Image (cartoon, rainbow, N blue to C red; front, side):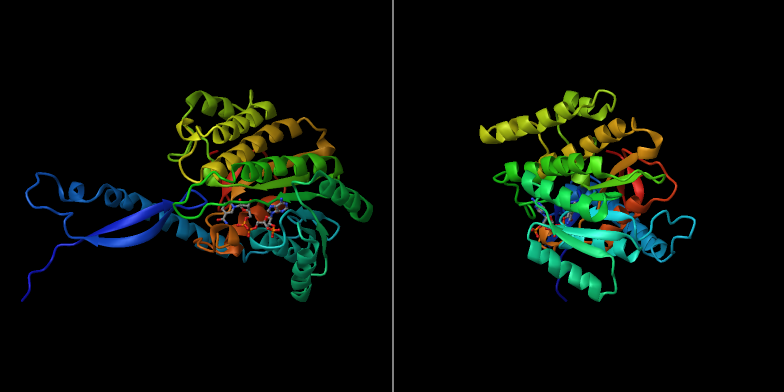
Amino acid sequence: MGKKKEVDLMLDLELGLDGSWMILRKRTCSSCLKKGSGVSADQKKPRRDRTMGHKEKSKERKEKRLQEISLLRTIPYSDHQRWWSKETIAVVTGGNRGIGFEISRQLADHGVTVIVTSRDASVGVESIKVLQEGGMEHVACHQLDILDSSSINQFSEWLMQNYGGLDILVNNAGVNFNHGSHNSVENARNVIETNYFGTKSMTNAMIPLMKPSSAGGRIVNVSSRLGRLNGKRNRIENEALREQLSDVESLSEELIDEAVSTFLQQVEDGIWESGGWPQTFTDYSVSKLAVNAYTRFMAKKLSERPESEKIYINSYCPGWVKTALTGYAGSVTVEEGADTGVWLALLPDQAITGKFFAERREINF
Ligand SMILES: NC(=O)c1ccc[n+]([C@@H]2O[C@H](COP(=O)([O-])OP(=O)(O)OC[C@H]3O[C@@H](n4cnc5c(N)ncnc54)[C@H](OP(=O)(O)O)[C@@H]3O)[C@@H](O)[C@H]2O)c1
């Protein structure tokens, strides 16, 4: 009988777009376990293997949570929880595909009137046709490019004329140009402009159009765990900047703008690698970090509005979702990815603002 070969499993890991680990490749390695090295069996394993226990446990917890949520989604809102009706207007940016389309679908399914916006007007028309064929009557569409101020203005005018304003804004539109271990910052300006400045432009344009209501206006920013300030990995190294961005009392729009401008300047000067920025999906992570900080800043600013004009703003991470943005390589479905955004947009009786969520739970910024 041939001698049994001792093999060990090595896992090649990468960070997913939501900041979770994804397994790229499993490999076997026979040279990993040498005899008599004076170290424990666990220590003999490659470093990546030793940490897998924790990662697998966290993956298990996440899967369990997703199962819980799929059950929660089957529980209908009671009449007294439903603060909305077909008169409630929700605007979704980038609503023509991926998470944005699914958020639109779920909101329409709950009985809200949804305006699906898209860069390409004809794609928007096709998108709402799909929703209408699915039995959703209260849907409309309009062209909207969040990078184009005249497009935002035209949309705002149309919205006021046809709907008299809005109740819910979902800032979903976003871009990413990196996949897997690829970490180019070639498109950094586009990524920061779209994900951060585009989100800001839409928020600023929509706030004056938000209808006063006792339930409060709702803004949901689709963000990412990759933009966490104090995450265990992929965070910015500059401690002073981290502290400044963490402190909501001193947080300002200027500070956030300055941080992203510094990053973009360093990219232009070819020195960003020594700038202490997140090491993976760098430009995307910086853009979402800015969105998260902006969410907290705006929550504080909006809290000063009179009671009848309250607007609540929160951000969430949809998980690593199978969409074009991830090259369809994600681990969760669009239904799961849209869920927390829809749940936040419809939160009954709760003045929750300036928080960051994932899988229907608050997480740290
Ligand atoms: N997928 C994930 O794993 C993941 C994880 C964390 C966060 N997110 C966030 O989730 C959001 C949706 O992403 P997705 O995964 O659904 O991606 P997607 O399928 O690529 O959809 C992105 C949407 O944004 C639109 N968009 C891009 N630039 C725009 C602009 N300038 N103006 C208006 N719309 C614009 C796109 O329009 P076109 O069709 O015209 O290109 C598209 O509708 C993004 O903010 C993303 O950062 C995704």
